[in-house]
Amino acid sequence: MTLEALFAYAHILAILTMVVFLSSEAALCRTEWMNAAVVERLAKLDLIYGLSAGAVLLTGLLRVFLGAKGASWYGTNPLLYVKLGLFLAIGLISIRSTLMFARWRKALRSSGGLPDDRQVRHARKLVMVQAHLLPLIPLAAVFLARGYGK
Image (tube, rainbow, N blue to C red; front, side):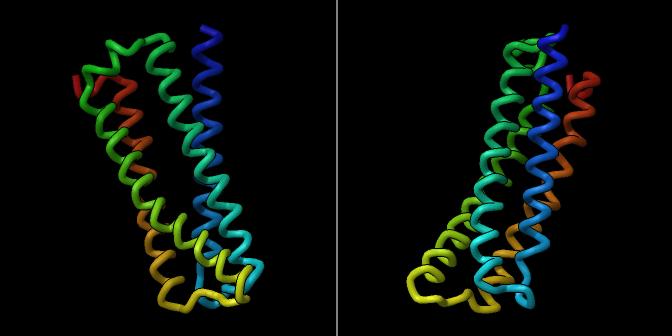
């Protein structure tokens, strides 16, 4: 029981960390605020966002395989696959913005160049799509936890 509670706590903490850093990216990724410090900060924020997403996945898997309900309970519920599909979609979208932030930082460090407005708007759109998909995961989670979908 204590282990299950600790897994749940770690999972929630990882989710909240992920949300905070994605929100920070969304706040900073604006054409009117773009400067050298923001380019550097976006790359750092994105690294922490990625690490927290990894922690969300790891703690979620711990809950599935070592938690009280067990893999057989979760594995037969299609809502688990909805959650995983949304998480995967967010991850795939995130790759694109991560690569953009890395390119921006490389260009900044090599030539001092900043991304143009079109690139920033595109990166912001990718971040915002992630931010709008993310709340659907806990929606599926609350129904999954209550046995819907079986």
